[in-house]
Length: 460
Ligand code: ARG
Image 1 (cartoon, rainbow, N blue to C red):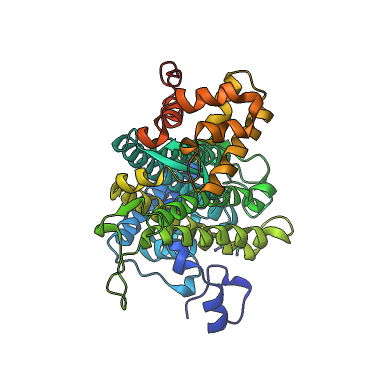
Image 2 (cartoon, protein in one colour):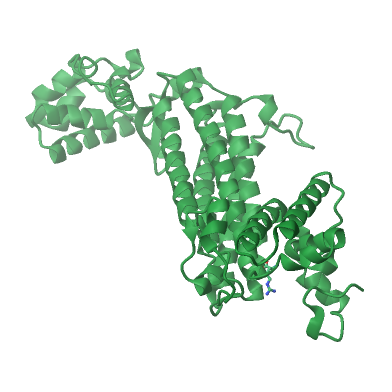
């Protein structure tokens, strides 16, 4: 067996079970690009500071180039006995170029190296997610635009509340995604500091230049405290938290679309391209992608909880437990990207069942608040108008009819003191039955567009 890079003080090899249990290369090889990037910057700094000579630096550069190419060509052999991505690359470099490779780890520990790699990786991952969020926002805005003017029932407590425009509802998700993106941008600003030079935890007595490596890698500045630099995983937690919030937003959208695609609602038709069938029930067409968006949010929250609990009892500086921070974040990033992608695709492949939605609008007394507000505009205190509208609804419920179906006598009996006003409601407002609830819907339409309500609500 090959001697470990840290093997000097050891007389025995680790057992196979320990090797299998402690290796991380099977997944941290994901960091190879950033590991090589970090090593290039580190070697350049070492040469600039006279800690290695320029020719060694150039040989290291060439060796790293070759290793990068062989990884990208799928030819590089990752070895579990070399533990992690860092030692795989360093040992392969030694195989390739010999002595100069042994100088690369001067004034560096895997503890600051892994965090440099991971922060660089997070930076790129955040940029990628931001692109996917934008793409979904565009898909949602396109969906809203395609359905401009479509009025749908708005719900609170999943009970019919007030009519809203579909675009009003769809754009609410766009707003949430905008905040999701800004959380990621914040996270990137906070994580963009360079741990290199912290070494194991105590920094180094060698004359390194931490600003040079930090600048070369595009960090804002070196981290100020070396113990913090190797202890900190709050950038991981922050990234996982931001993803969790995005995932929950997408899950809620998923729930809404799954519900709307049901026979009971029947508001939305996903195309075949985003639906799947049943192996037993021939008639089934299920909105699986959005069910899985809802479902996969669970693992993203789980990833966050994993790292929270991982960090909970750890004393400061590096502990091997921290190797367990990577898989949850890799999983979280891969999963959120899939969720964003498929939600955008779903949005591009649904149509709304206008007829069904229109037919459904009369149910549920969506115009009760409009009636109450109408009376307020005529000078009735809101509590009184709420009460009148409430009694009117109760009367409708007992008669199994709509507010607009109540006769003048029925309205009169509700609150004799407000007779005149109720008469003008009964006669002055366009009947919802005949206008598809155009009045109250138009009020919301006006609000959603941010337009003036003039000419929309004042027709009575
Ligand atoms: N593979 C390790 C990790 O991901 C790298 C750091 C190991 N450091 C050490 N002293 N064992 O955390």
